[in-house]
Length: 166
Length: 447
Image (cartoon, rainbow over all chains, first blue to last red; front, side, top):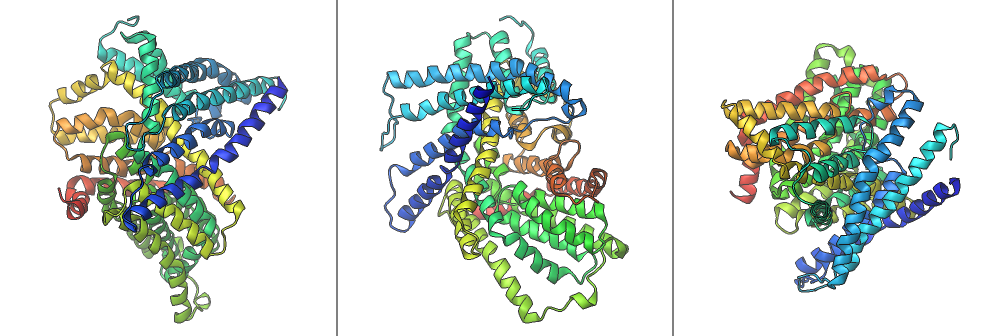
């Protein structure tokens, strides 16, 4: 179990560092399009959609990394008043009551959603007409990474309750 | 339909459940989503498949929303500016310029924050950078500690009202309004707040100089040419960024998203100019950007899920009927809405508030015949307070994270109170002088 937690942490930490760098091509494409359109009067057909793809991949795939670093904003003003033990127990309960229902359902929904896109070989309506199924597949991948990180955090909290830090 | 209530009751139950879920301390994004999941599966007539497909659709909606692409770009721009060390230079210059005046260093803090606010769109990085410099510097000069805390918190919060601002980007993305117009509308209200803060500091320190003494004579040793050089090197680069971002939007050269991209690349160039552009700096900025961006946009996923179920169950109409059923003057309804936003601001962060209230309040404002641009600006000015009102206020947390040990949480709480009053004053001015909000967008973009 401890190995699993460490493995998930290492995986999401590794992925997060690379995903973070997606901001650089995002900036590049945005600036490239402005320069091409305004300076050379030859707008691209692909920059608009490329921009959106980089942006979507960036924040969606970053969700697990953000959860690993506990940076999804939470309102813990009340929780902080409790002793650590109570807080950990609340964490364990909210994992089943809040995290699993939503992230689980959304993961399932995302798989169905992307599968449908693959089944019809969905393409965009724009002039460039890129295939949409690779982009839509990011949704289930991101959600499952997030789900696994949530499970790892849950197990970590179980160990903490026993007084062990992973 | 398992839960068979009328819409009003169901709306109330759903909100009640949300508040209980929020205070359990689980991330807001998932709490919103979980409440949506339960009420969607149990309370809605549609089948589970329909609800899940709706969630996936809404999620993809966020993934393809071009307007929101500006969010990571503005955040990266702020991180890069932070790494460039421009805040230090700017603060040092303002310190020298304003030091001789009573309360001058407090005014300097607000000025630096306002200039920064006009070049970036976030609160965190700016406030931390300026707070780290200003708190020790002002304490060394025997400034009143609560006053210092108030200055830094209120000044840092300007980042998200003075355009560019990710709050306005998010607002535009949520409601489908032109972000350029929102920027123009929020410009003078943002400046108004900054001016109110500076007047307050000047008057208070003018009356009781021990709160903010002027710099002693022996420290005013800079020659005029030296000062001029400092102003040039520290003020021109941010002005260049402001011109690049806001200028390209106003001139119609670029969309908001493109302007954000230009700003981000401009910030990289600036960091290079100050010889702070290293691969480590870029990597750190990118990682910090990812953490904030993902937090903001994943919250969108939960918020969208919540809102689509809440509206689908008729909760929006229920609240609309209650508020319009009061049959009072529209201004009273406006104040009720503003009061709600203020109250929520004590416990929830700005983004959660926008996600929860906008879909409900926007149609109400429409029914009452309010100008949507004016209403949007009022909400955003109001949300400035959400950063400062305890117990949950981002600006308080940021300052707590970097405060010197002598600055206690109690001092910070006490210090922000006058600034919250000033923000209320600013909000009232915007309510009763709508021209302050509407003049610039009309002048720039027409009607």
